[in-house]
Amino acid sequence: MAGVKILNYELSPSPATIFGCLLPAPWMGVLTGLLLAFGPQQGLPDRFSPLTLALTHCLVLGMLAPIMIGALFQLIPVVAGQAVAGARKIAPFVALGSALIAVGLSLGFLQGITTGFVFAGMLASLLYGAVTLVLLTAACKIAVVDSTTRTLRWIPLAFLLVVALGISLAGNFAGWWQLDVMYLLDLHVAWGLTGWIATLVLGVASTTVPMFLQTKRPSVHWQRALPGVLCLPLLLAFWPALQQFAFLFACLVICLLASIAFVTVWCAKRCFDPAWGLWLVCTASYMCAALLAALPTVLKHVGGFILPDLISQALPWWIAVLVLLGGAILPVNAMLGKIIPFLIFLHLRKQTPMGQRVPTMQAVLPPQRLLWQARAVLLAFALLMLLPLAPAWLATAAGIAFSISQGYLGSLLIMCLLRYRHELKTVFLIK
Image 1 (cartoon, rainbow, N blue to C red):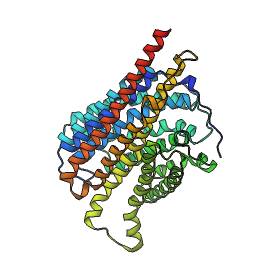
Image 2 (image 1 turned 45 degrees about the vertical axis):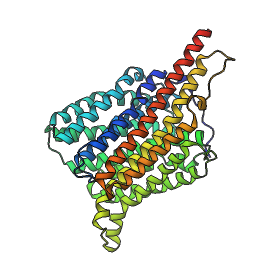
Image 3 (image 1 turned 120 degrees about the horizontal axis):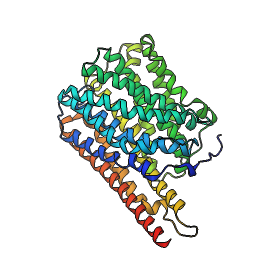
Image 4 (image 1 turned 135 degrees about the vertical axis):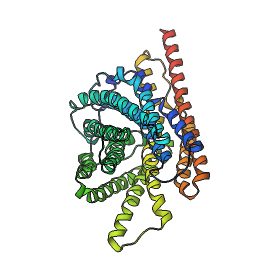
């Protein structure tokens, strides 16, 4: 078993650096839910419908990207002991820039406006190029001691590849060049969902889940395997002849890792924690997504069995919801509910004179409120899984439910920030 990790809290960046990335993100989730509820629903739940493409990029770029970049700005110093030079200058532009990129792509998908792709491609090159540069500069100095530090060292390269593939596709849609769209799209999706999102979630969870839920620490085999075991099939996918093998290999690896994680979370000591259910559904989502993704190929090779039309049409939607909502939004919601109060407690502790009381994490953000937020986002997740059965009705219900869940989370985080400012004023008055 891995030993206890020493965290470098003294290297933690300023609250403004992290909060500027994290706090606006749930509100982009609100807008995404409203787009699903009231946007043009023609073609749902087809994966290539304009609304599906717009929703996907609003979630990934508008909501997830700022959170994950902000998390890296925090984790690389605290967990890996390397300050991210330039993070303070870039952080104010991450959330706004990511939202504008998502808007540009959405206009391109929904309205066919090619200038949207041009704008998104150019802004992504500038913003994410700068982000990747500062992350790579810090990551190359990281001393690898476990799966989390290894993930932090290599994740900027995965992010760079996802961005480069995305810009290549945007340039293709903008008419800059003509490339093999389906080949690039398969790589973009695979590296985005697995090489970037799943790898970062698993790598970060290897440290944060044992800390907050009091689970068993990852085994030595887990620490050595990640993130390489996830990236190996993605590297094989660059060769067209090996793509099908790489796809099944990736499904097998994800299912195995998710099964181990599911058992670990199930046995957590703090199963009463509001975040416990979100992490449990997250691990189950990855298992189900891997099984569903491999199902058509396996059935075709085993007995030539063809799935009914309703299931085959709904399958891509279910996989996307399981990975993006279950495997990304749920753990991100769980971590925001822990990380923000923890950061507030940490920075108040650093600025408060010894002997003076500092509010606990539970006082900053009561667990009961987090429990209601967790139930709201799980309801939205369930409605999104049911959407293929009645797209016209359930799209509106699921969109509204998701907006409410993320709006409530955003409100809770703003309340945390107001509490932080109130406590700081109290400290300054006493001084």
